[in-house]
Length: 303
Ligand code: OGA
Ligand code: MN
Image (cartoon, rainbow, N blue to C red; front, side):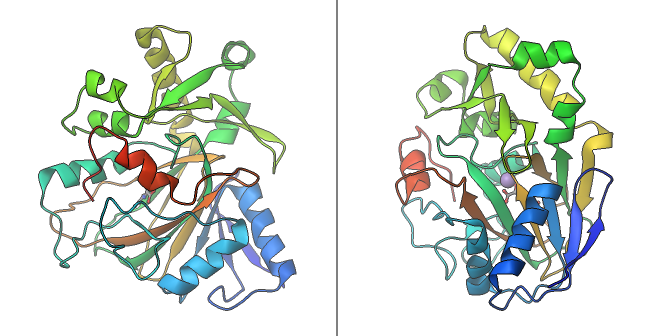
């Protein structure tokens, strides 16, 4: 099937049309979609007609779809694979608990989903169920091109480095009440700063605001380097933003881009976004490792 590809910038991001993804797809079309995703890093799909079940079913073309952490509660949606990226409570009202709003505010910092997990996530597919009547986009940054454009001296400097990532570090930066000592007792993942994106033969910078420090460097030096590189990746020339109407979906490759939710008044407007998360291929992990990670955090995500 010939898919139509409309690039959103010169080097990354593309809107795809020409196929009804709410229906089962043949193998050739699935492969075409995987190839486009690996080429463009972000794909955008308009008016998909997807519901919870077909959202999860479609996501399986990329690989193993992770279970969302339960935080000890019954799953919120009909499919246990759906991560909650809404600002809406179980009773349907807009969330007003300050700590829960700060947990969501962490998503407005540049990040890579699951970089705080030992098992990385590759694609994430974020489907809009209800959009505010004002601008409330997702922003994306092209971390592969940002790597390509680094001065050689910086590439040499960061080549073998490892960063430690922690979920609550980004939440602390967003204002959530915790501190460095509490963070020390929480789970951290070790991740290479420069990651091979083997599906495109390119390299990417794997950082964002979960990255807390660099192994073998003082905290100050490591943080300065992380901030310098995060600033580099998020220069205007590497950015695109995607706006949504109900039914629209963006899919990003966490091993190729960073992302963040755009600012909007989340006390005034409902924004119902649900996300599937696809495990990096070829990696084994327990079925429900997100729940395990959050259960062993000193503080729980208040979700
Ligand atoms: C996410 C996320 C951004 C948004 O769901 O992982 O970062 O725009 N969402 O809601
Ligand atoms: Mn995210």
